[in-house]
Length: 430
Image 1 (cartoon, rainbow, N blue to C red):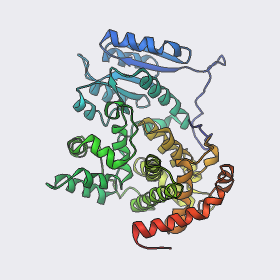
Image 2: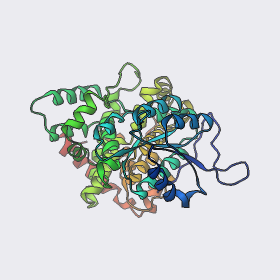
Image 3: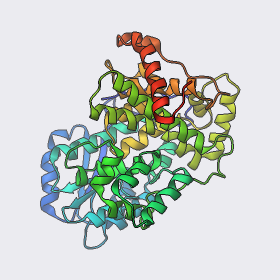
């Protein structure tokens, strides 16, 4: 598990972890299902956690809205099919009225289409009947993720995000490939695996209990094959779960800059892992963590472009790095925002840790080689080898952190591995 570093520069007060009487504040969880037996089963499963969670059970969507009107909740777990109001309609209302509530859909075995229809309203999905361990894990993580962001304003902004904009050229390439009679799982998977936004959305869905059956999938191409061409086409065309970025929003930094840097970090992280003899699953973790490590920048560029551009201008003066500049203008860094979003979307802790701490790995509890280690080093090396953001204060490798893992002596071989990656992947050396 990961720990959350303290944030600086937030304009709102930090949310209390303890109540007025000094006891730990309970998280409030709302369960909505029109089947009494389902609610009774959940109540029994969660009884041992009653000292940590305040749980409320209602059998009707309107009752759920009335309950939320009375007091705030952290998480809402809702059946996707109810007689008076569908789960999809309820989630739309929750997103509009109570955007900071984490929305978890509870769906039956044969409701694949229903799940897809909620791809832009639910944060995570559970299959019905759900594994008690999955239910507890998802709710517990949703509560824990709140510690990443102390600002209610930023939490509201992030919980409203339902898609991460893609590089326009890649989005157009995907749509053309989908329309092609010759499109294949491999061709579409190859496009998705080059784009952080598409990859994040695909992994959100494929790692839900509904699709993954308990497995953790981190290879974008494999994720596309599991979802199937028809599902990916529906996500792109009818559900609009993918979107192209409006390039007019941010002029100080091009989307291509962020994209090329993210792809370079992904490739470098994977090749460092290869040099350490990691297995395929670990290499997938490294690649996707690198590809997604700056998704917080994409969210900021899309949702808070003026503040993001101001952060770029502050960082360009060279006195503070980009993360600190973002804290000054936004109230949190792209690392914290990206980790919070993808944590809500259910990506594995190892990926979330890599996103949250890729600039400050010593703030984590990691005491071994991990995706965080690989992404931290790959991020710095990508900036060393390329001209991306050269006007900003350069990132530095935390050698004390590497020494604590007994890995400092591997730094030069890792540089060599990244140079080899450049020759292998792009056909040139530095």
